Length: 175
Image (cartoon, rainbow, N blue to C red):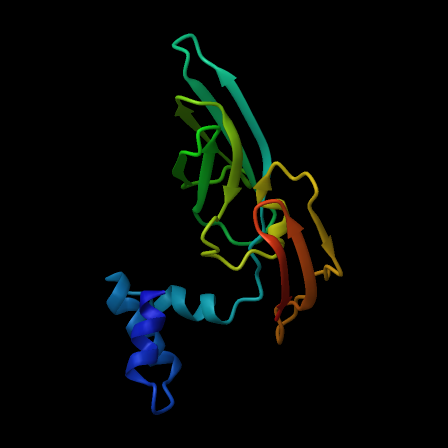
């Protein structure tokens, strides 16, 4: 995000090149990204995280331990943020750093019982299907969801309408 703002600031009145975008990303990240950058920009891979399970149980110390399972149905392996919300409204942020055979899990201990969980709560990654990122999924549906179409010239596209308890109605188009 900061890299894109830096890039937009520098080139707001003229065209910038891909190399200049890479330079802005490297400046903000502090990393040399030659090998990574080209593959990242021109990839036809997709991200698709699925919140596959949430189990909450009381421990002998009267605290609650919640296990969150996330499956990566996409082609890119990367860390993902998770937020857990308890009955008293307290939110706990965590991160699944690694996936083993496309499965990642994290355990979070809280004083109150968990009532909801969400993968990528800040919409930091371009997740192919966001309708499966929230628990619980009651009264949640997706309408006109597209099947990803991946080729060397396009990523995927399609209109979608999602409805959920926490976010109301969202209209969107993946391009």
